[in-house]
Image 1 (cartoon, chains in turn green, cyan):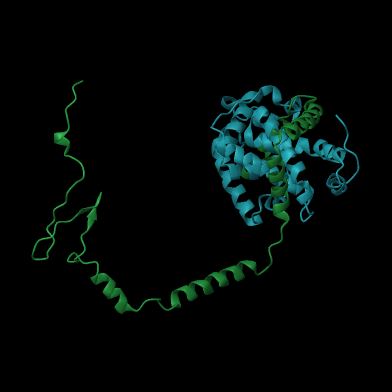
Image 2 (image 1 turned 120 degrees about the horizontal axis):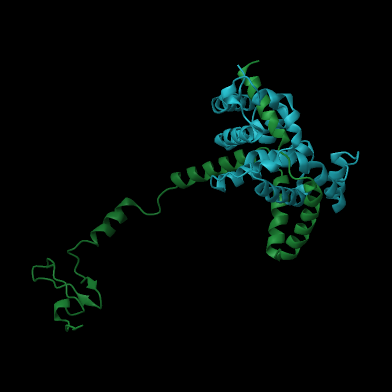
Length: 142
Length: 195
């Protein structure tokens, strides 16, 4: 006898592991009472969800549905990528220029405090904070 | 215990689908012993098996309207049972309890048991409890998927093709899982295997 057969023979002995006598009689009664109590406990939402999850596996997906969805997604991607840009590159350059630091408009920080500009037109990096420094705050003793 | 009638599973299923709850009760009576064996040998615990079995039949009852008869009803029931048992085992911490009282007394007269526990080697004389414990420990060392295949093939005696249908895998995969599981079990149960 091969070791494989020996193992199968040993495992077959596990068929003798049985529940206590009368177990299966009580099992059906327990099942029926659990079913009834479960039905009473279920909320409307749970009943609806249960129905949906029961019916869902029986939905038939058309044969080429996945391929059609993939093809549509591909076509949409190609359309988006190949679409001409709405603004010409020249406009973009202009708009970039208008955002340089030498811009004549003051840059507002916090509560409408302007960046101080020098007479030469170059901005001096000088920010005015709307609050007093921490070191000026009154000390508290504990 | 109520004796199952001669009515076919399919007829009982159709009657249940038509709303006859008593027909499902008969299916419960018919399938609970074999599903008990399946779940018990995967969990090695009677209380867990009882709870799982209740859940399995409750799930089957809720889903039976979706059963279209593409597979046999027994295959469908086994699929629910195996999936539920595997999900349970994934969540359960490693805990193994068993009762020696669960063993049917008939085992003492089984020639395979006598052979496994008799005087091949006096050093390895084993009693019923020791053998059962070793068998359970060996089973628990298998992965859930391997244990399911071993339970259905070796303990329940289901053919490869039916196991493949239940687990939705190929027959080749069933055979390879069995081969691997048997090899592992040989290592664990060396002392009980006659040379």
